[in-house]
Image (cartoon, rainbow, N blue to C red; front, top):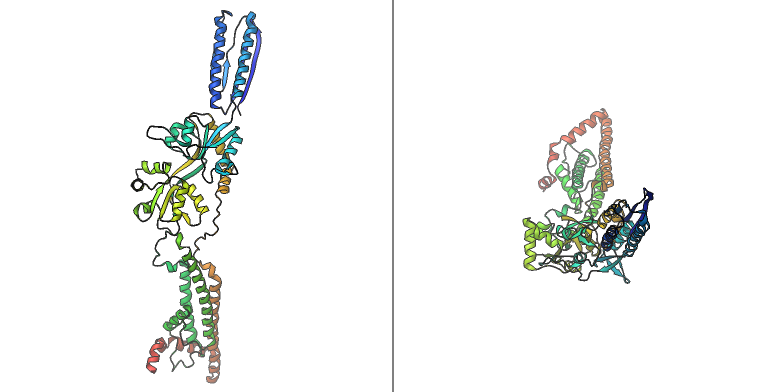
Amino acid sequence: MIQVSAKTQMFFFQEGHLHVWTSCCFSPPFHQKSIVFISTHKTFIGSLLMDVKLKNFGSQHLGSVFSSPRWIHLSRLQVNRARMLSVFLLLSSGLFLDLVVCTAAQSELRITTIKQDPYTMSKGGQLEGFCMDLLSEVAKKVGFKYKVRLVKDGAYGRQDESGNWNGMIGEVVRGEADLAIAPLTLTAAREKVVGMTKPFMQTGISILLRKDSSEGAGFFDFLSPFAPETWVGILIAYIATAASIFIAARVSPCEWSEAESERSRFSFLYSLWYAAGALTLQGAGPHPKALSGRVICSSWWLFSVVLLACYFANLSSSKTSESSHLTVKGFEDLASQDTIEYGCLAGSSTLAFFKNSNNPVYRRIYEHMERTQSFVSSMDEGVKQAKEGNFAFIGESVSLDLAVARHCELVRVHEVIGMRGYSIAAPLGSPIIKNLSVAILQLSEAGELAYLRSKWWASSCMADKAKPAAVQPHSLKGMFLVLALGLGLGTLMAVLELTFKSRRKAAELQKSCCTVLTEELSLRLKNSSADKPQENADKEKA
C-alpha cells in the first residue's frame, strides 16, 4: 500500500515573519496514476504560492518549490505577520489535498497472466499454480493488492511488423495492465519496451521426444549387464578355477594314482575347457573322481549358477529400458537427420533464438522449421505431437521437464542451449521493478522458489523405470568369497591326500615322509606326459 506522511517540521515567528518548514513523504511502491496526480498537485501548490506573491501579500521573497521522487521540500516562507493566517491555511489545505489524492489513488494492481500448466491453471473458478503462489509471496513482501485476469489474446508478447506488441507485453505497454506474471522470457526486445525484474526461474532450450526413438544396439551391448571390473574378476576366477582343477587332479593320488605309468586326464587346457563347459551349463566330461576335485568343481558350479542368474536378470532389464537411449542426443543430431520432424512454438523467444543465431547448426534448424512450417500454436499441442511419435518438440527446458514428469513415454535430451530466465514485466521505468526484484532475490535465498518448483513439478509418472546400473564386483563379493574358499579347500585336500599316500609309501620303503612327498610332487608336476591333452590320449587308445 502507498503510505503518505505529512508533517510540519518547524513553525515559529521571527522578526515579524512566519517561518514554516514542511515535508510530504511518499513511500514506495508508487502506483503509476498516483505519480501523475502527485506531480500535478505539486504544480498546483506552487501556483497557489505564486498567486500569493502576485496579490501583493508583501514585497518579501515568498520562496520556491523543490521536488524529488520522494520528498517535496517547501523552503522557508517569509510573509507579513498580517497575512500569516492566510498562508498557513493555504499550506494546510495543499497538504490535505495531497493526502486525499494519494489515498484515493491506492487501487489494486492489475495483473495479466496466461494459462499454462503448472504456472497458471483454473480450479473451481480460481487460478492456481506456480506463478500464483509466487505473486502471493511477492505481494506480501512488497505490500500491494492485486487483481489477476487472463490475457485477452492468449499470447505472451510478440512485436509485429508495424512495431506493435500483442499478448501480455502489449497490455503492459498500452497501460491495460500494471504487471505481467507468467513464464515470460527475459529478452532484449522486451526489455526495450517494458521493465523486467530479476529472473525468478532459469531455463534454456532443449528437445522433447518419445522414448521409443531409440538408437541401434551396439556390437558389445551384451556386456552391459556387468561392469568392466566385474568381467575382469570373472576372468580371473575362471583361470584360477581351471588352475585349481589342474593342480588338484595332478596332486591327488585318488585322481592320478600311478604318476610313473599313467597319464593325467586333466591337462591345463582340458581344465580350461571343463570350467568353460560348467560356466555355460553345458557340462564336459570326464568329471573328477577325487574328493578334492569335486569340492573345487562344486564351488565353481555354484558360482556359475549365481553369476548367470545375475547376468540374465540385468540383461533383461537393460533391454526393457532400451527405449531410453535416444537417437537424437542434441541439436546437431536433430539437424543432421530427416526422419524425425521437429518444430517449436510459433512467435516464441525460442524461435527468435534460432532466427537470430549465427551458429550454422541453429540456422539449419530455423530454416528447416520455416520451410516446413512445423510450428505449433501452444505448448500442449507440441507435447501432443511428441507423444504421437516421429516429432521432436523444441521448447523451454523447464516446461519440457514438466511434460516428462506428466507423461511417462516422453524424455528430454540432456543438451540445453540458450540459457535465459523468466521475469515479471512492468511498465518501463516503473519504480516497483526494484522492489519486485529484491523480493524475488529474498525468496530465492530463503529457498521458497526451490520449494515452489518441487511442489508444482512433482512427477506423477510411476511407471517409468530408469536403466539398471551395471553389476559391480562388490555386488558379487559373497560369491567370489565362496569360490575362493572352495578352490583353497579343494587344493588343500589334494595335498592332504598325497601326504597320506606318501606316509604309507614311506613306511613301506622305510624312508622319510618328507622325502617321499617331495619325490611325488616333483614327479607329478614335472611329468611331461601329463602335458598332452586328454583328446590325444583318447586317440592313442583308440
